[in-house]
Length: 437
Ligand code: GUN
Ligand code: FE
Image (cartoon, rainbow, N blue to C red):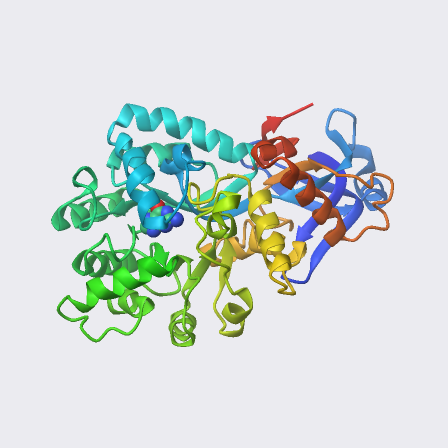
């Protein structure tokens, strides 16, 4: 057994976050397979485990906060290079920067090299689960599958129309690759039409059927940007079978892309009728605040996601970084941006506790892995990170979880590009992946 001492924060819901100011996270099992054994106060730990707590297996982080590993429910691992490229409009940014960057992943050797670097960094910022977009290329997907550490579903994007020649597949090739990769990876493979603009309805329909049969996740982008929505509707209304389509969400509904294992990134400009369809089908939205943020904040300026309306409609949602639409890999940045943008807009209820829940357990719930990940409970995987407590070092006994988190977020916001330095220790299934002194 190993004992980690610190202020333990344990997200449970939008309004509840467990907090033990002088707590102990007890971990048992071999590194790589270790589980949470117990979460309790130091006094209780000394009573219960006193004899087994020795200097060799006890790690004192009483000046720090211990949090469960993150779930990033939407990002493009092949867009690491364009995170900070100039952003004006979504469709232009895709053409000018993103597509050329993704084209490089046609080279399996390049893909291997980049995957090693990217997923190592992802572990260092404490992200151990989520939903990932890769490029169209099989080699890039293989590399990501090999390097990703945690509960990830990963998909090769499918692009069969309105795309640059180098990134355009035939419909049969797209469907064939879907079959092949589902056979190879099973439920780890997510069926991933890039968005309705780039993937033909036949491919979405056949692929969604194959994915459903294998109980795989399906993911895409929905209603991110007004120009995108307008173009999508015009495009589909000109196609047989879609002449009378009323909305973007209805297009996905018609081709079978919605459902309880469906993830739709963004969902910013949705009508009440669309939210109703998402709710009825149990489709989840992935909100990516740093990607949607104003261009001056290095986002794509897509707008502010209405989490209240979404929740009122009974639609499940979680947070994502949308790398490279979002500029920063750390979920601390994503949480901070969610809180800050809503505060600025005068929207109440976007608390730090809510942000933490939506960046951890909510993602695990949506992915169906909350029985073994997402927060701290006996028997769950020992995935956690240790973050120095920011400011107020002496007053933590009186601080609540909201204040502790707010200070950490604020510290990260001061230097967005160095947020990986927030994490002092990152542990995956009991194995230490990052340690800073
Ligand atoms: N819509 C279609 N593709 C993309 C992408 O790569 N990034 C974002 N943010 N939106 C998209
Ligand atoms: Fe995206």
